[in-house]
Length: 486
Figure 1: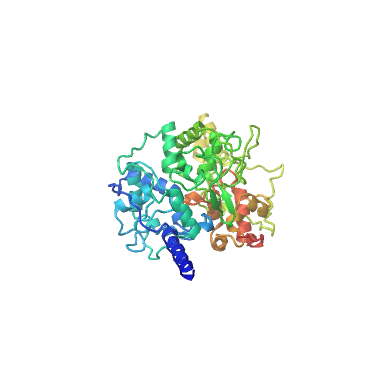
Figure 2: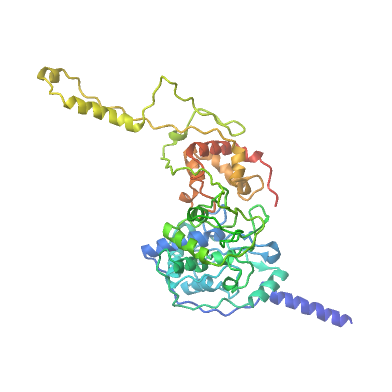
């Protein structure tokens, strides 16, 4: 009897060792694709990498794509860490061949032959070569980092489930010869981006099967993730059903996927990436393709927003550029503990304020008027010397009166920057930066870090409102918020 028990225990342990982590290598071919480092390919590769790769392979405080813990995956699956993609010869991919990297991307098979939890990308050969070219380009993201990424390990349950669902076999697709459709606002190009480049289908379809994106539930949402606060979230239904994207306009859609702002003004939930390089043509193609898919009823818990035909939209701010002159956002008023900053006094009824256009056009009109009369010789002799008009003064931006703590929470900032959140400590460095730089960061973070998942708030926050928020942050305001719970 005791021998039978020991035998059962050994069998169970052996099974666990075999299944946990999907032990054992899988067979996947090496695509004969080489890095394309032409200027056009580098630009295309950068767009794809920033949108589809950087968020997972660069941790929030890192300057390089040296790997990061994948907190977004459910903890019951195991412990996962993305790979170091820097050019380091041992810790990174410096010694990897283009064919090895192409296999990782196309089949989600690691260099040591294990099937990984990362998505496999069916992008065409030309786009795959462009991504490889960008990874070989010497971009600062790939500056060699000698820190090896920790090994990813499945739990027993996670490994068993993953092996059963996937059959421990990579996705089946051609080794070479996959075309890139002509770019244009077509359903063909929209499908290519949704399925093969941005991989919307994998995240917005439940399950881990390599073939799930070909099933009836595609784009219906429900895939489980963890947000920065450690709370379980599920991907949204992005079919055009009433429980999904019904009543979303193309402008709503583009603002959401490119800038991370939903139609109600809220920030899209993590780990949704931002497709910063998406242009109008691509947005139209992707939007039309998703509209062409059969609507699927799936009211995903916590997904937002679901719109109706009469849902009000925020008052989007007109695009504004902010110059590099820090003085433009300096005002004598100080932020109060609540973040409220009073406006500067408005001109009285007896005062007038000339715009830059008026300041420059007035002298021109006087000169023109004087030229219409024939000047006498005596008048010309006694005429005073011409004096150049003073340069127009730049308008000074005055912080708006806002409830900064409320705004900070409404915009979704607290989820990442409140006490206990993943990026709270990063705000300590903000006090060393100038107001103008931080205002730009808040409104257009992608101009500083193209692959950032921070939303672009330029259409929600004008410069005075962003300035008030910045000054509240620099005064230590976020530290007064309730800590997030993990």
